[in-house]
Image (tube, rainbow, N blue to C red; front, side, top):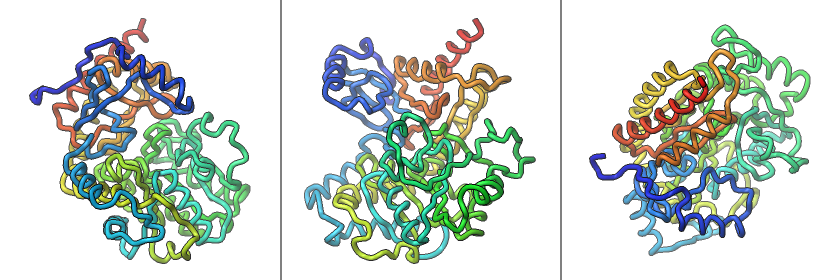
Length: 448
């Protein structure tokens, strides 16, 4: 590559240093972490990662969608260093700090639609969802929530009650927060009603009104509908064009709050600052985190001034709105608005075009879907049967790793592309070349 960088695998994986450190990690660290592959990472820069043995990888997972501005973007690092010299922690629950208000004003203005908004800062996406959960109950004085199968909203008890992505995330933790009802998401490739869009007329939303509201959850008891604009951990599932508009209309009909969980989809990743903007829908509440501060822990729950009007002490935090994280977030937003969001849209089209060609060529690729640089590739045993093939998606993830491309799976049988938004066409082409070689290898195994 012209910059001299590129994937370089110098040792067996893991290398000798990595092997030793991984053994120590397994001895002392909770086994509940889901480690994707045996890499003991040491440093990162731009779109590259290095392990402790000097192996270099192309980063196409961006820290699970966190490092949107790339790893250690110099402008973000400078903003962090500047604030570190002034104060590391100010308890913004009890004291004012200029960066908290500055970032809140910025996010308020980015919220879709007109009107004045307020922001509650937390440390993570899960905490942002917990805030939205509590705010919805406080405002509506209603006990119930609607969420979706395949959804991921976090793992704390309230957020976990909304999550329905993998059984391991919920197993043995009952009872969860009561009165959460899960309904099918608009997963058109695998329609749970065995219908075809657009002839279905979005039957999965009609199901909520015709069945759930009449048999399970009275709409007058429902405080909010929590929905991911694009399902993340569920498989990078993109709903049809009029899905969110119809869902929002249903919520408005019954005076139910519409909560868009933008923790994975937000901050420019899809070519819009918030993914919900692709559907011209104004949520009542937005939750955001992950990419918000380019790697520092920061979450935010954004709602209108009318909704976020609870009294002091109703909800608070010690570390949320940390000034160092706020400094990083302000610079992150600047970078995204100045060009990274546009680059996501441009490079996303380039990558999708190449993946569509692969889809036509290889029978094991059942579906390709996404917006911007949030792209999912679903693997099947054959296009005809659509039988899920997790052994293929998992195998491709591992083989790409061994060749210097770090990807992550999502859903039971999909691989996600979520590179940092700084990538150029050369890096994308190198990653796609590696990916296609691995896909071809697995496709030929399947034919045998």
